[in-house]
Length: 368
Length: 113
Image (tube, rainbow over the protein chains, first blue to last red):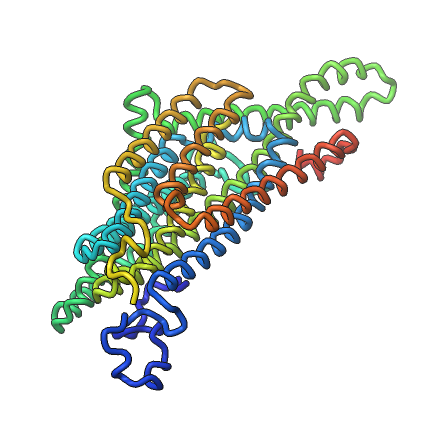
């Protein structure tokens, strides 16, 4: 599985044909499938073998992610309060928007497999570009979510320190740097392809330019959804999060003050006269201390959140790399009714990434 | 040689099926968000996991062609889920076993308060 966006240099029949062709002579190869490897008896056998291999890879992926789902399940069973507490910091609408985007990209991917099977070359290129753009939009929304959490101090474990007001840090800008570079690079390569009259290169980089630009569409979506949501409910999601942070913050400060008071009282009452006062205060102090402990636990929830969504994001990036490779090969006209295996196998991987998100969305965003 | 038709290599999914599945997936997404708004307490996780599993099955059976695929691939996939269930099940049983015996930490540095 190639995970780089760079297309393979070979334009002619690639590795599958192998060097073995020469031994058999060119006469034998006449009328042969250019992509049918010699060790396979038929196109169907080659397809079935590839598909089985892909399913085995998907199984390893499922087991790989199950480690994180297991961490989630164990933590949820021992500290359900952390999950209830974390609920207020996550915007379900952004998660739902991303779910819809991923489901749509799954549809276009499944449709792309169909287009490859039926030899609809132009449709295949368009559908792969839409799939790539959806992946970009997904990452754009994710960048808005991550940067907003960064600004509010909603981070992993001990870094979890929710603030009253969002800092205006350039987090979103910094996260968008790779996309900006991608837009510039693909635009330059698109221009080069056009000027040197290399239609395949020009089309390929043009499609990737659309993909890179789609990221900013995703950023726009991520910024607009909370505003629409606010217009409907009458309160912005930012305010809700800030309100939650304020409550938490006040409680923690209260706890600290109480703790100090109790300690102070205990220190200065060797005669035991003020012990009653200390015990009276300690009930409240214990409650406030509980809030501080909840904060620690909520921080650990966000460790799980960032690792799970981050790993899923890496899978999206890897999928984009492989789909870009498919795009290049489909521009070369490699895929048709007799040879569409790679499109199908990458499609399977893409659907699995979607499938994992289908579970991540309710587990992280909805259940509190 | 073999077929000259992709139908004989693998099943071609009709567009109608693809669009219907997409519609169903979007419907279930809206449904799960709507149900989450009701705050059903302990039923919440059961219902949302049921909906998620329905969605995942639709994706696996139709988008991933498992219905028309070699059944062996489906078997490999289902077995992986069985192993995930074993993994999670045994781990949770183990956690539940020793959870009551845990000694709470009162050190302020360890608890972070």
